[in-house]
Amino acid sequence: DGGITQSPKYLFRKEGQNVTLSCEQNLNHDAMYWYRQDPGQGLRLIYYSQIVNDFQKGDIAEGYSVSREKKESFPLTVTSAQKNPTAFYLCASSIAGGGTEAFFGQGTRLTVV
Amino acid sequence: KQEVTQIPAALSVPEGENLVLNCSFTDSAIYNLQWFRQDPGKGLTSLLLIQSSQREQTSGRLNASLDKSSGRSTLYIAASQPGDSATYLCAVQDAYNQGGKLIFGQGTELSVKP
Image (cartoon, rainbow over all chains, first blue to last red; front, side, top):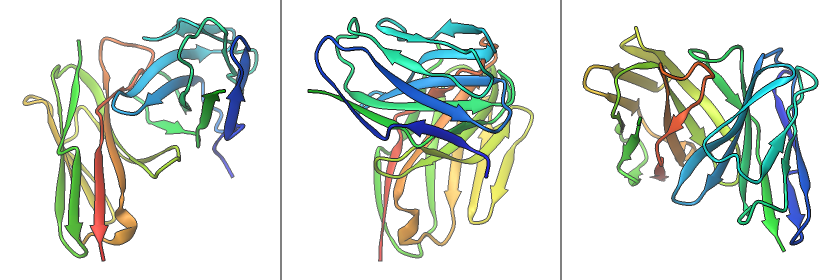
């Protein structure tokens, strides 16, 4: 059953903590993406990767970091430098970059406590 | 800078009605346009992908059209059902970005009443 798996579904972070959101895909896609969704603001791109061991900043990369050591995995770390991390985080993948269909995971809701 | 707008923001219709959701974008230099469905608290489900060279795509009761020159797309839902209630998002991949970045509209929240 091919798809994109995000974990955990819910995550709580204390002030000053780093937390890591997991994203795994078994679609054999080269490109992977992280988006953030806030009420009234739509989805915004945080980071993307078109190939293993390479990634680029999106529109709102400050306070976040990523790695792409394996084709199927693209974890996102929300660092303590991200001042407003409470949001819904969505991971996506596509066969290649521009011009191909994107598929999304079920999301992780991060809340600062 | 590419901007995507969806109108209306919310729509409520009785079951069985045919309806149209609208999406507009400011720059016609796009690779494709994709329509998604999002249920509350869930991820996005891809409904239809229209490449820039295509005029429309159909899947079951859904039909999406694309007029690139005027910067418009519509999603037509035939014979609506309560199960169609969700937020519908459109997104474009613009041709200036090789990475496949999607630019999203704010969505239309659809409610179909039994």
